[in-house]
Length: 244
Image (tube, rainbow, N blue to C red; front, top):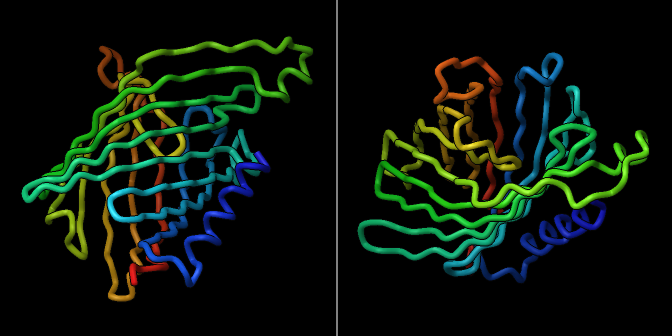
């Protein structure tokens, strides 16, 4: 993971360079909430950098769990490759995705996938697929004398989201609500979506603070539905370089 951190820091340095001839963004995010497995309140912080050149972009992020049952210096890593196609009435974004995280101190998870997002004024929807591998962490193998193995593979899992906006999506302030099974550093099972409400405001200096509430049940489409996690997310996005 030290290598991943070096790559992320290099990206941050690159996108703030005075020789950068493209748009770039840095987001600082914090989550606080409680789940059935967190053993009380948990707190995470994350840093996500995005570099865009014309209609292509690269995003890299890291997550740090500060408080909770699975506290870790780096508990998640994600990278996204994007290509945008713009039409007069709508836009389509194609993404390649890789996510690494630690659901617990004994398990590591890798997700590799692809999806697309269609956006039309006050509505956007996302569909795609991903492959997940679950395996023992190095700590689990060491502490419990477990043999290294290839892990468990889940193939052709679905990625989806539905998002509704109060204003057109390029408005300087907005409120939206929706449902998805993909977050920055995790992808849930198809039957366990996260429901959310988001609010944002973009200042003239391109600083955009935002506030979100998220809720996830255990088996939303099952006959018996139980609470699993609720958290609040806040942060700020900063456009730190613009095309010259």
